[in-house]
Image (cartoon, rainbow, N blue to C red; front, top):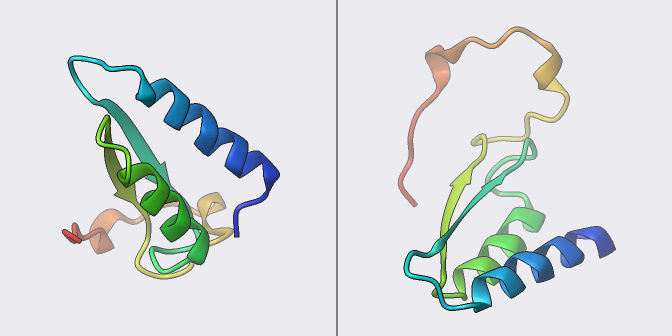
Amino acid sequence: MPGRIHWLAIGCVLALASTAAADPLRVLVTNDDGIGAPGIDVLVRALTANPNLAVTVIAPATNSSGTGARLANFDFVERVQL
């Protein structure tokens, strides 16, 4: 679940997006805990509730914490539209 710093970041993004702009503010949400992690769901729901934001989510299908130190093999990357 998001901690205090996460809620501060969410608040800052929402405050920036509350000012009417010609184009929506683009926000990229990513993690290494997987798309099913509860924290990413809470964040995405909060951000997508704001019509001034264009939210893109990039996350692995399963938990991949700690795998960033190894060499990447991009043969397994697949785009899934949610």
